[in-house]
Length: 373
Image (cartoon, rainbow, N blue to C red):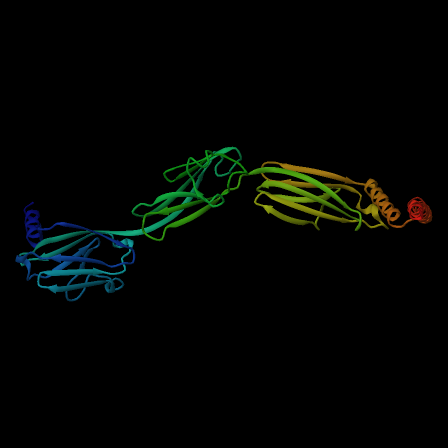
C-alpha cells in the first residue's frame, strides 16, 4: 500500500501541469487552401518558446519540426515574426485536418499554459454518395405503384438538395406536377408508369463550388405485350413480319416457324422497353410451299410468357398472282382498246368539220347580205 502511494506521488510531481490562459478562435478554410493560426503571447510570456498541438497531438517544435510525419512536414511551417507573435501555417488543408489546435508554452516548473485555442472547420464541396430507391417490391419498379428516391450527400456545411427533371427543364415543385412531390432530400412519385419521366437529377449545393449532380434512370417493370403485323410487297414478292414487343426486363424474344426458332431475324431497339423483331420472307415461285406454316412471336420475362402467331398459306400467294395480273392489264392496252381509241379520234375529227361549216354559214352570210345593201 505504501509503495503505491509513493509511486503516485512521484508520478504526480513528474508530470506537467496544464493551465489555461486562452480564448477560442473559429477558423473556416476551403479544402486545398491554407490555414494560418496566429498566436499572440501575453507580455509576461513574450520570451517563451511556443508549441502547437493539433487533433493528433504535438505538431511542431520551433527548431527541429519533430513529431510530424515526413509526409506532412512540408505542409507545416512555423513563423516567428515578432517577439510576441507566433504563427503556424498549414497548407493544402484536407478533411483530416479539421479539429482543435492549441498554442502552448512550457515553463521551467513543467507547467504547460494554453495561450490560444483554434477550432478549424474544413469546408468541403458537396458530394453525392448515392440515390436510393424505396418501393414496395424490393427494388422492382412496378407500374401504378408509389416510389421514393432519396439523395444522400455529404459536405461541410451540409448540402441542400434540389431535384430536376431534364426532360421538362424545370426544378420540381408542387405547382408543376401533382404526381411528383419533394421534401428535404426525398422525391416521391405517387403513381409510377411508363409515361412518367424516366430521368431524375439530384443537385447538391452548399455554397462551396463545385456543386455535385447525379441522375437516376427509372424504367418500370412491364409484363410482355406484343403486336404482330404483316405486310406484303407485290413488286419484290416478299412478306414482312413485324413483332413489336413492350416488356421490361426482356429475358428472351424470338420468332418461330412451326415451333422451331428462326435465327435470321433483325432486332430494333425503340426505347428502354420496346423492341421490334423483323422477319423477312422471300417467296420462291418455284418452291413457294417451303414458306407455308405458322409463324409465332414469343417474348418472356419473370412476369409471364406472351405469344402471338400468324399463318401463311396459299391465300397470300393468290393475292400476289391477282395483283400481278391487274398490273399487266392496266399497263398493256389490248387490241380492242387501241381500236376504240382510233375510232374515237376519227369521230372527233368529223364533228369538228361539221361545226366549222355551220359557223361559216350562219355568221358570214348575214354579214355579206348587210354589205350588199
